[in-house]
Structures are given as C-alpha cells and as structure tokens.
Amino acid sequence: MDWDRVRIFHVVAEAGSFTRAADRLGLSQSAISRQIGALEEDLGSPLFHRHARGLVLTEQGEILLETAREVAKRMAAAQTALRESRDVPAGHLRISTTVGVGTVWLTSHLAEFLDRYPEITVSLLVTDGEVDLSMRQADVAVRMQRPTQADLIQRRLMTVHTHIYGSPGYVERHGMPETTADLDDHRLIAYSEESPGVIAPLNWILFAGREELENVKPREASLLINNVYGMLRAAESGLGLASLPDYLATSSGRLQCLLPSVDGPSFSAYFVYPEELRSSKRVAVFRDFLLEKVAAQPVW
Image: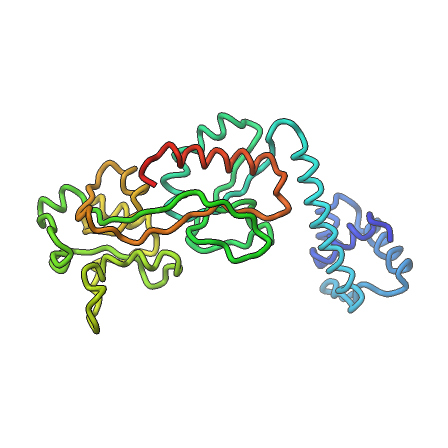
C-alpha cells in the first residue's frame, strides 16, 4: 500500500468527510477523492459508504483505520525519537500532576527550568485524577501513588508527610489545640467525598485520636473542598484547621503547624513516563531537575 494514500485515508476517516479532510490536508476534494479511489482499487475493497450527509466506514475501512492509527502513532514516536537525538534538549513537554504539586510547588520552579532549557516548552495539566500516559494524554506525570501500568517507567521522587495546620488568626480566635481530643471543638476543613482515592486518606484529621476506638463516627467537617489548593487557601484565610502536605503548607508562610508531634499519613510520590520516551532528553532533564529541587527542600 502507498503510505501517502493511507495517510490521506486516515485523515478522511477521522474527519468524516472529504470537505473537512481537504481543509486539514490543504488539498482539493477532487485530489483526495482520487487518492481514496486509487487506494480502494489497490485493495480491491470499498473503504467508505458514501452518503449525502458524509462518509461511513465499511468493515474493510474499519480494519484499515485501526492499522493506520497504529502506524501514525509509531511514526509520531519515531519523529519524537529523532527530534530527541539532538544534543540540546528541545520540544514540547506535557506534564500531568496533582493540584497541590502543580499549582504551588512546581509552578514556583518552572521559570528556572525554562531558563535552563529555552528550547523546551511546557503544558501543565493539573488534576487529582490520573491521565492515561500510554495514550499520550501527557508525556510525564508526578503521581502520589505507585503506577500500576506495566509499561510505565517510574522513579520515586520523595516521601510526602502531612500535619495539621492553621492560621495564626484562627488560633488567636479559637485557641491552640493541645491534644487530638481538642479537635472536637474546632472547625475542620476536609476533602470532599468526590476526591480521588489517593488523597482521601488525608481526611485523617476527622479521625485523629480515634483510630483505636470502635464504632466512633468521624468528626464533622465545617468545609469540604475537592482539591488541596482550595484547602490551603481556606486555612490561610482562618476558616479552620486542615491536614495538609508539609511541602504545601510550609511554602505558604501564612500557616503554623499545630500538634507537630502528631503525624498524619505519609506517601511516596513518583515521576512516571511511558517506555517510548526512555531516551527522551527533555524528559531526562526534567526528571533530574525535579530530583534536584526535591533534594534542596528538606521538608520532604
């Protein structure tokens, strides 16, 4: 098969019409129609049912489209690998990370990274849910749990520790808790039930001091928020007390650690990326940059 014709078929199948495919390819509709006709003749099978409202793939067309997608993916990977063979790290890097890491910690360091590597550009996808790296929804990710996909390369970045934090203004108005039992008398900020499972254990502030008791209900939160950055800002404003990652709370400068001898959950964070980017220079320099910044911040 002629790859140029298969490439045109791929665009037409995804676009659903010769008109839209012509716009994407910069070719005339007649030229595209001739290429598709020639491909169908080569294969001896029709690839589309042609209707007034558009194109519908035949069974043979569905089979070819699946193969064309795979070839296009491999070609893109090859193009990436060739680009990465240059001496200078370059290209676009799509980073997926959690709300807490992305909105506060990572953004505070990205300017330095871009200054070091001016030929790299960055997209930052901030979400507490996971994106599918195998489908290239992102190039790399910082995740707060070990990845389960076998085809991902992983590197442990740090251990995240958590404690209870509140603003000086809140403590002045409501008093300093001396024991976990005192938390019963305070306004508490917690993750909402809709939060991903990886961060749900951070609601330990609702159970602190009650872990060994049976049939005891958790404390009631005064405020539920579905991401850690919102919890940080609420605690800074004096709304209540919150369990927060130490790296996040200490970067604030507007919070104090309460009950410092009472440790919350700790968990490891991982830097992960797909196997096909193993030799990527832009991924390697970003990984090393993160490890450098983690080592420089003793709060981990």
